[in-house]
Image 1 (cartoon, rainbow, N blue to C red):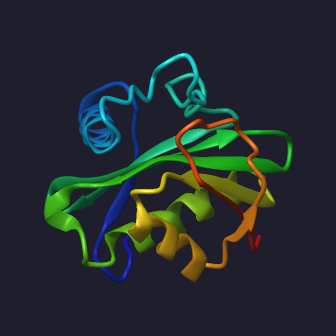
Image 2: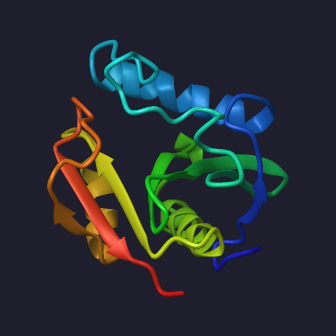
Length: 160
């Protein structure tokens, strides 16, 4: 699917190829942002290949001009609720509507997988992410996943 910012989204793997490369770049950036935080550490909510693969999950990469510029995943929480995970936009593609297009594609993917509600979280230093989620109709809720770094948890009822 192509969006208004001309991103082509394709199914991918969180642990291999371009998806793995983008996910690793996200881990490194978050680690630096939060003083060495390991997103794969034991206290962090899981978001690896097992969670972000069919049948209950998905992982996608967005391509622009033949290059991978963003990624994100959908993780099953229960039969009607999913969590959006691993959302990342490469630095060179930021500020151009890519994150919004990625979020829309992840929501579309969630509906395709049968979910009625999407949840997500973000940390205190990711103010742009929080603003994006709020502008897209996500409403703040209580901690649902025990993420020790998050300060914002939200959900949205998906149109389907």
